Length: 161
View 1 (cartoon, helix red, strand yellow):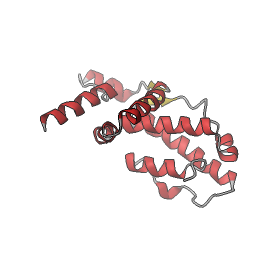
View 2 (cartoon, one colour):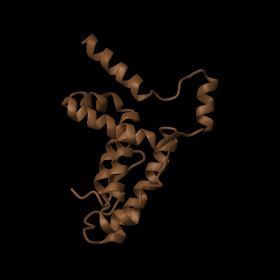
View 3 (tube, one colour):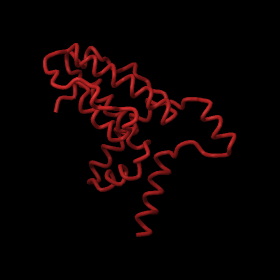
């Protein structure tokens, strides 16, 4: 699997949030064509920004991700940062209980590594103040669950079984 063309990341995100990520819109079979890879990655970045802002009420720090370096040189640091952001999206999305459950089924070493990856991705996010956030507060509703709350919910579900 090549991670320098954005296709695998788009496919993964299309499972988490199909409304925001239609994997049929990215170019496939782009091997050796850095311009098509860059086009896919720009689309990925744009869609991630929209998804985080609209669905997760977060804004993303993309400053350390270099699309030209990924598409031309398969820059590992930028690719890994994209993966961290996608891992953060996974534990914040509507399917988070299932995803966290899968992580909890991993070995303790893998769980620790996933926690580190997720925490790094989450550290790149900032709350996005929107009218929708204000509406939630005015209606005395809580914004999205935190990762810790999701873990507590999952643990209590496991105990009740």
